[in-house]
Amino acid sequence: MADRVYLSILGSRFRSQLSYRTSFLLDFVAQMLGQAGELIVILVLFGRATELGGFAVHEVLIMYGIAGVGFGLADLFVGQLDELPRLIRTGQLDVLLLRPLSTLAQVVTGDIQLRRVGRIAAALGVLVYVLSTSDIAWSAPKLLLAITAPLVGAVLFGSIWVVACSICFWIVDGRELANAVTYGSNMFSSYPITVYPPWLRRVLAFVIPGAFIAYYPALALLDRPDPLGAPAFLGWCSPLIALVAAGVAGLVWRFAVRHYQGTGS
Amino acid sequence: MRALIGCYPHLAVAGFHRYSTYRSAAVAALTTNSAFGLMRIAVLFSVLGARQEVAGYDAGSIASYVWLGQGLLGVIMLWGGHELADRVRSGDVAIDLSRPWNLQFALLAEEFGRAGFAVLIRFVPPMLIGSLLFDLRWPQRSQTWVLFALSVVLAVAMSFAIRFLLSLSAFWLLDARGITAMYGILGGIVSGLTVPLAFFPDWAQLALWWTPFPSLLQNTIDVFVERGDPLPLLAHQAVWTVALLAIGQLVQRAAERKLVIQGG
Image 1 (cartoon, helix red, strand yellow):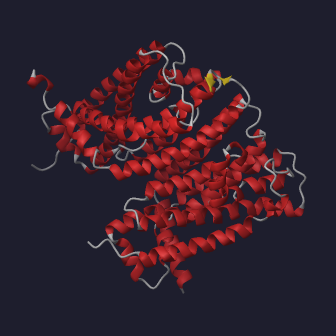
Image 2 (image 1 turned 45 degrees about the vertical axis):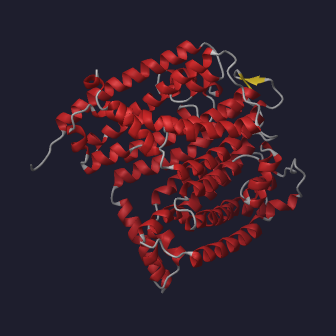
Image 3 (image 1 turned 135 degrees about the vertical axis):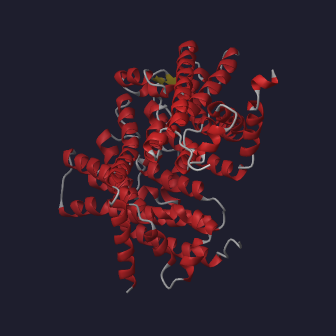
């Protein structure tokens, strides 16, 4: 029953957004360019260096691609959480809380933005191109890893998003802080973690599980040992980490919503 | 004299006061700027590797480049600041254009007030953090400080001039959101915020030199780190600032003619 409600909400969102063709197309292209920005940066940097943190351009681009598709999917499905401060300030969240449906699911389906597919398309294009032109010893497990890594990355990014946005229940305008974590994680995981100083790496790779989004899966795909000495099996552990992260995110969200007392106006 | 200068100094002071109320936003911005600053600097240092310098940047200049960029970002207001576009869309701009002032000058005066406060709260803190964590390159010549201050003033005026034009485009496009979104996305790259423009291939650097964008951030940063002769950098800024403000005046006049106020 509830699934059908969400499906009809999503359907109405898609139909309304597709009805303004030109505007949709412009937004779609803007999203593609948004993703291409970091690609340009990576290519410019490799014009001045042959390796970054010990990795060649195609290796960095595999990380960029996995992170980009994962971030794009997360942005598409839970990016609406960025609107949480507005929903809280205007009191619209109270309406959602009263309905007999999941609050989180209502927030994320409420204004889903189809144009964000543009970001996914751009990243996926790069990922498929780099994977098909790189010298990878393909096997069935690796093929499975290549397909699931962006999806698992999306779950990790989504969990990070939910936790980061939960802060908005305490801080009046926490959007920028939340964006620092979400967009920051996207930039972090687009590069090999070897480029970052150790203390920054500890926080962004392991406290926020940024290293499991793209770095370790990319190492496994490339059959490369980790220059930092982590065991090779970590490349296959991301789904497990994602499961834990999603569980933590769910708990944090519940705690935050229970704490919520309205704006009082 | 008073009649000549008119309301503009008051508007600048008002702009300063208006933005001084957004202190918690400044704390959030500092966190964001610091996080991205730390990551950008790590990536650029790994480009440098064991080398002394890349494209004229040594470790100290790279550190200064990153923190100046993160700090100036909020001063020139590279992102956001499109309230005028909303007022064009809603029609409120009719009131703004009918007041006994020159709208562009009035908004520019307010912008200088805002930028003045942003120097205190958006520029100084990231520079402090940067100088605590890294060995920044500070100006070696004393006159550089004066040139840098001048360069910041020009960058603020130019950033405003570009946003003013983008906002007024709503008179013809009805909705400037698409074009401002595009500017926000590409602005970070073409202004030299995410990667120094000197790292780009020669053809791209040459192409960008013919656009106003290096004058938003890169030229100001290069004046500070004393990369080459500062005069061409400042001249580029001055020429583009004057040109874009002048175009803004023309477009403003065209917009006034286009404006139709219904009823009465």
